[in-house]
Image 1 (cartoon, rainbow, N blue to C red):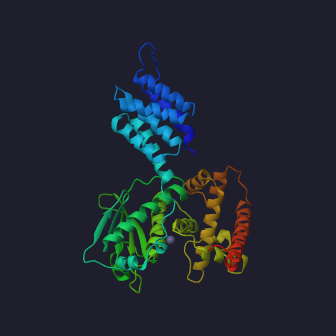
Image 2: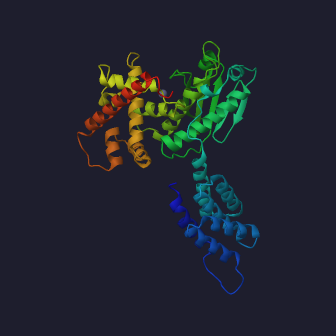
Image 3: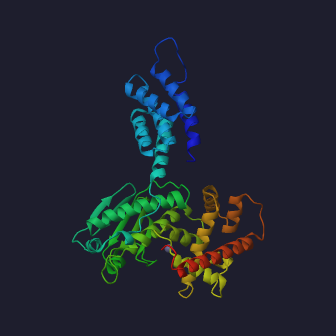
Length: 399
Ligand SMILES: [Zn+2]
């Protein structure tokens, strides 16, 4: 719980700012004095006592006693009781009108939210039974709309609109928090689910990357950015396409978030596609197997070439995607959140990936860095593929 250490000083500083640390000792304890006792318990890490005092004060309804909600919230947060901590922060917010304190409480609510948010989008294809699949393949006369915090989803199936909206929120949370190391995304995305490929081609803003879906980032007439994702409901056999939720939606959403993050800066296609593949609901072992085989054999795209690639021909597309996924996952696993975030920031600032990486790692510039990175990544990718193959060949291996 990395945020824990900052909670007590932050809460203490805020309460000091509110004039709550001045003590008067000649009367029965006032709300201010009780709050000070709660704060002391919090500093002593006596969290249960801090919470007990704080809730008693807060509920006593004396002048200023509502401020104790901040102590109750911090005590609960430190105990990992994130839901109750959020409740206390909200009680505080309801009564507090000072911007700094409000910002602190809102940030902590966000931290509590991330602490309990599901980290992976559901693998929908494994969740649905035959009846549910059939129901999701129905196409209604008119579209339904489902709205959530970040999405307005339109689909020709009410249940599907709800499912897409839920999956979209989970995927976005994972992309911003885990893959991009805490990027904020205070925007609304319009998601359109078209019944089939024909309708999709007719309506989608950008049908360039045909994989059952696409994203677009355009300027409206008033100059506002319009964020949009187009998807398809049915495959060519007119069955519900579970890949839309498992793969296409999180993949295109990651591209959308990245497009806005990088703006005019150049992000290597390999990294862009690699991150989008990481956002998908399940790791595709076939990609890791192919990357290992390519790097060990004669279909290899060497790292400098991989990073220069701006588009790929049909005959090496599989290897390009497989290696891009392998490289990105390799970097993501080896860097800390801060290092990964810094690498992205340096790429956004205009540095090529190897320089951005050296800057993020605070190592002096080394002309052989790219070569060393290539060797380390290739060795790991080959090892990983061998491991997966051995696992696959072992009948006792857990599936
Ligand atoms: Zn893509």
